Length: 558
Image (cartoon, rainbow, N blue to C red; front, side, top):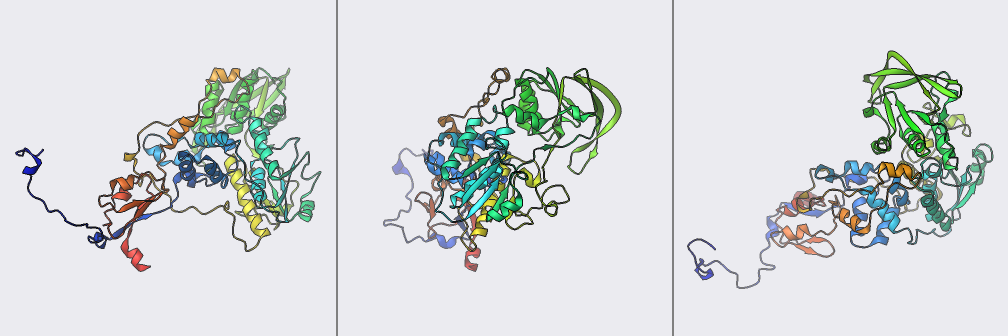
């Protein structure tokens, strides 16, 4: 109550309209800025190699439209149960919420979506197109290409050299990270779509590239990079290639190679080899020629290995190996960091000091290369990989490649994106002039920057992460999956943390803050431009910058 007054009747008289002002006060004529609802790209989507529209499917998930959410997800990535377990989540590194109180746990939500919808109907094959495509290799790139090609009704035959399909997913990633039943379920879904798998068939011996070109209208090759790079040191034949070891364990060989083991390298394969050794009962040391800061391994995988008990010896470079009485004596050069090299990391330089360490077994994991014997020499580029266009096409018009074979070891999600990109190119080749299918890769729109979002209207809370076993528990559990899927309630709570950058999720903040009641609501905001004065409050308050202010002269120009 105002000082000096005792009742509302004591207030001075104020002007009051005696009739409706609707349609009379056309305040929109004052406006020089117009609010526009946009569909810009969220930074998480831009960072994802597959371009998954994260805010869009999270919006559907929040509304309880789970089947629609997973259908939308499948347009970019057909395997959320897989990537929700093994993706290094570059999306989270770019999440605008990371600048506030921590990135949204997108990978955890992705895994929840995949597991929660596993029993729902999957995408089905389109009408028979009359076209037939061969896919060689059943890793993430090959399975992705098969999925999208089959959606368009093309007959797809997948060739795999091993007994079971899955490639890297089955034979290169340990079960405690990606269990075989998850891979089996995805392959079963592809079979249900009509994809045919022919296993035990090797490119270069059982089938040839030329033969496939003659038999099929298009060929997609994604056989991976399974050859271990040589270390180039004396006695390295005494060491075991890390990928061979992971492959043998995946095939059921769990004999302990020795109690005292070393792994040479600092990448993801080295982390997997060391962690598998621990689960078999060995102790494992990782020898890496640089320091922790320069390690190419995904930070999370390095942290898990350290938690498990893997010992790390940095600035250590093996220069010779000798087998003596069943043991391996490893001569190790002590290194120091020099100037940065072309990779941006500090170059390791020898100090001149060496020492000898003795192990029961030593494994190499210093990098992978591809076996290109089945490809014409003219198809190979100077860098030792294949000459590949952005869409995967090679110098042979009907042959496309993707995954690690095309550019060297990469992530599972990058391989999935390669498969989808090549599938779109192959489909376009088989159907010239046809409209691209809805799953075709698109060029990202303008990305919403972190300075454009407004977290003031979103409740502050820390991220929810995947629950993991404690280190001692997971070592004792062997190859049992070490992480669990978050529950539905936790998933919905995490969805609420998303700013929904560039996508209107009908939060209603703009409607609430509009001082002129110029916003109507019909499953989203609509602007009454006769009343809107262009104050810009709606755009300022919008959490994800889905509304922007556009100068009226831009519309006048049109």
